[in-house]
Structure formats: C-alpha cells, structure tokens
Length: 231
Image 1 (cartoon, one colour):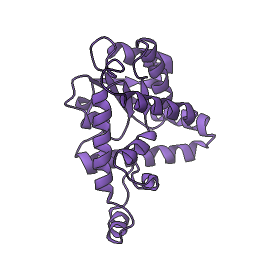
Image 2: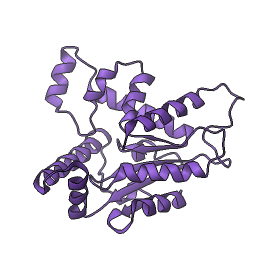
Image 3: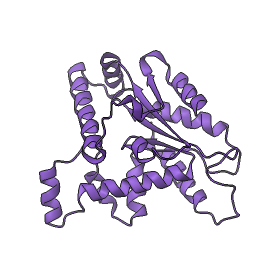
Image 4: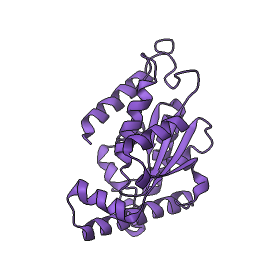
C-alpha cells in the first residue's frame, strides 16, 4: 500500500480535529455516537489491506464535513513524536518488537535517546487521545489494551493459518518460503514480547478482543465488511 495517501489523510484528520469549537461538527460522530477500531494481527494476515478497505467502507457511511476515517500504523510514531515535540529520528527506537534492554539502557545512559519505556508510554498517550477523538483505525502497539476502558472502541484480532500467512508474505515480498517463515516467527515473537513487557498481557488472550477473525476464510473485502458491521 502506498503510504503517501494515508499520510495525506492523517494530516487532513489532524487538521480537522484542530479546528476551533463551533467550526466543524463533532469530529468523532457520524450519528451522535463516537467510534474507533483497534486491529491486532498475526503477521501475514493482510491487516493493512483490510484496514484500508475498512476505512473506505466506514468513510462511505460518514457524513460530509466530518474528519475522515484514518488509519494509524507506522504513522502513529510520527504523530506521537509530534505530540510530544520529540525529533522524528527517535521513531527507530520504538519498534513494536522490543529493543534489547541492554542496548536501550546503555543508550539512555549516554543520553542518546529517552528510554524505550518512556517512548512507549508517550505512544500510549497518543493512541488514547486519537481513540477518544474517534474516526480512527489503530493498528497494533497494544491499542486494544490502552483503549480498553473506552466503550466506543471495537477491538479486533486478525488470525490465520501459518501456511496461508507464509503464502501471503511470499506473494507480497517475493520471499522464499524459508525466509518468509523466519520473518513471520521473528515478528510474532517481537509483538508477543512487546505486549508482555510493557502491558503484562498475552497477545493471544481471546478476552482482549470483541471479534477474532480467521482471515483464511474471508476475502479482505469480506473481512472489512464484517468488522464494519460489528462496529
């Protein structure tokens, strides 16, 4: 997916939310009810494609004049750093797979950057703020845990068989099956460790989600439609 249109939509969303009171209708409401979605995903489920189709479906139901439905994935870090007036170069220190605590401690000790824990906390603050505004789809980074107390947020977990997810990775990145499988396992372990380290949560706990969707059994469009209907 080309990141440029998504970045443009993020800027549009942020600019709309920054309008003075009385200018635009409530940014987060299409029918008087605020809504947002968090997407947790196993690697290779096609989450970003599903998120984009979901955004399109939700946007089609949203009245003109309200801020656009917007996906926050990698661009979430850009927004977090901007919110907290931090340099964009720090984005590389907040991967969704946890940085080695030894490296992190040494670099913090020598003043190279704030600790990963500080950056994760600031990311959580940005996620919570965006979800409170509404009209957002937040991908990963423990969004479902951070926003668990907000009744207007739907939490979705995308899963699939290892074989089918490896096939998608091979198709998308032109990898061999062996390299795709190694990538999948590394990413899965990183995300599992991220949630365990910072939120003391098991990413596979089904009680953390309202909907768990097996993407083996749905087209991306069908998955997006199901999520939109659940929302």
